[in-house]
Image 1 (cartoon, rainbow, N blue to C red):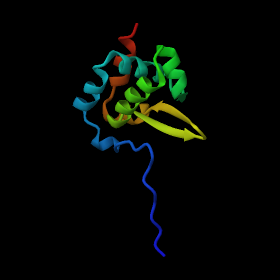
Image 2 (image 1 turned 60 degrees about the horizontal axis):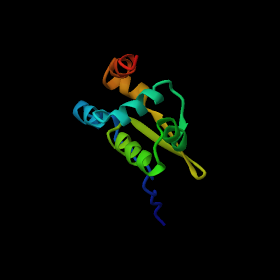
Image 3 (image 1 turned 120 degrees about the vertical axis):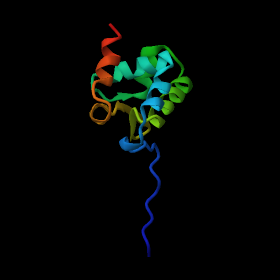
Image 4 (image 1 turned 90 degrees about the vertical axis):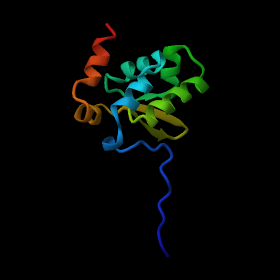
Length: 108
């Protein structure tokens, strides 16, 4: 018997395939930029917590979180029925040094 691995439910592109234009396109929406700023502290957050913090319905939050994940900015870790979101900070810092710092500093 051959073992076939199931596809990852919430795939993220390898950091080498993440391009700056795609990252900036994803961050061009103020809601997504705010999400990244909230995640920049390194805490993994449940989807619902991000939606509540931004005062948006779960469906809208899921849409924006999917776009951030597809752009390579975040990762999703399923925990039971919950999805926890985190910023790929170390990988992003290695790929685009200083980018996250600039995004966070601009929030002030």
